[in-house]
Image (cartoon, rainbow, N blue to C red):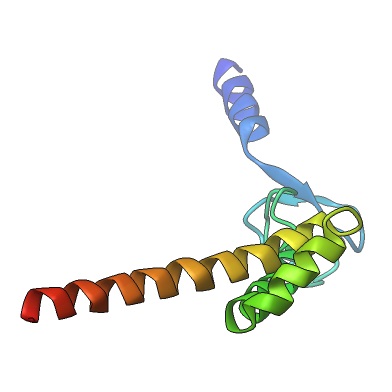
Length: 117
Ligand SMILES: [Zn+2]
């Protein structure tokens, strides 16, 4: 009797999810619902939503544009600063990386020229 009750409580402590098709309570690690046989999506926490990745990808390209055409990146940053701050920051960041990178390259070759002269 005591054994059975402890086993039952152990069972309840396991992670469960509910089938999206028939609503049956099934093991969190199950890939296919044993009740209706429908394939189940992987058990993932609600925080990992791919929608945010799409937004990041969108602003990522503005960084690329700002990097290759820093003037365009700067203009977009000024234009979008209030209406689309996310895209504006990305474009401005791309332009900033361009400037920093070229400053570093010029400084490197300048130092090299001074050292070898
Ligand atoms: Zn099911």
